[in-house]
Image (cartoon, rainbow, N blue to C red; front, side, top):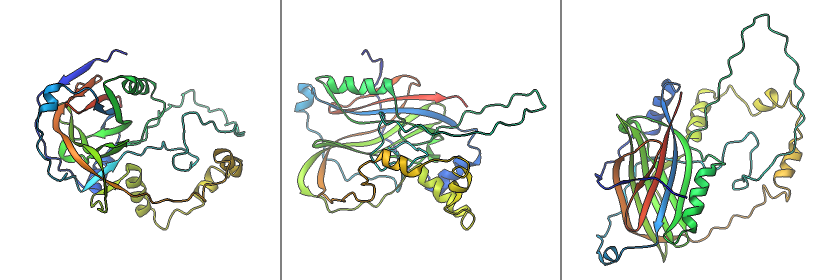
Length: 312
């Protein structure tokens, strides 16, 4: 597959200061219908073919990576009405047919047709069934020169740089890892701020703990709703609204999704966590060409990103 890449050569290192969770959420909720929204397709790629001159170059030792105190983590499981055990969702799964009886509504005396509003997509969570992007990922992994270490597609609002919380990145493939944070913001143009490290696994055990606060966007919304509705909603809300009028055999769905009945019996194994040593870094702020694949290059690893603006 031929890829049109906008190759960027000039960058500037950038400060990744951002607002906290409460400030960010308030900004989003003030009038969420007016915010610009984008779809992001992001690849982080290991380069397997290294030029001789790059192999001979001596790279400076990196200081300890400093990340923002508040980070958003992309939710990798799509939101569904039926809760799946973590990691059990796949593109091939099909649910059993549900027989739902709907009472016919009385014909309206008005000739006006009700306006159908397209629901907003879930924000900061992986979008399934991205055929074009999956083909790109497969082609890169089949090539002699590249391996995809991280891939994700999601929707998010875009604000000014100082109004945006960075996104946490942490992905491992065999003995290589990329980690750090990115920020997608919009002033006059859409920008990507990246602070990412390419790391090599060691045999030393890592006993350190993170101090950053990392949350999903869905958790932020749920925490706010729980605070506002405390004492008002109860656990029977869904039963009394949806499932009171739709007869669904919930046990059957549970057995179908996880027929071995191991939802509550999976053994948790704490494997040792090994240290990774940071080798290379992409610490840049670049203007992105919208609706195109932008290629941010480094001799050892690269970023491939496409940002598509969504109509309101």
